[in-house]
Image (cartoon, rainbow, N blue to C red; front, side):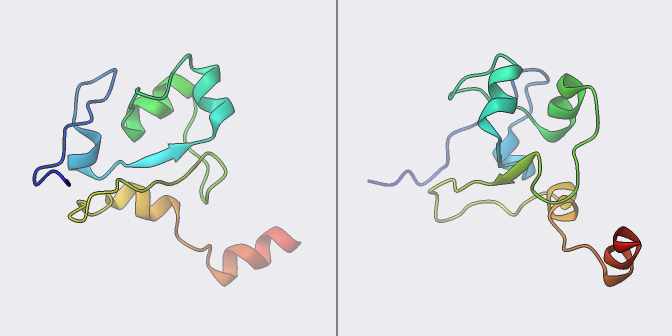
Length: 97
């Protein structure tokens, strides 16, 4: 039986519901372990960056998509979508130089 209302997934640090704000991602296992976090822990993007002591890198170097298994998953946050955008051709050309 699938729940009609998704449960809350509260950020360990600030208490915001990460599913409700669209900060639903999967961190690299070694990143999570280095931060002393376990399977049941959650961090919003801002708190993850604060704990890491740096901004998240664009692409999927630090975090990747995660499935909530809820048919009515809320949309991803703009910040998360921006992180996962394909780099522009101009950015790619600069990196080749």
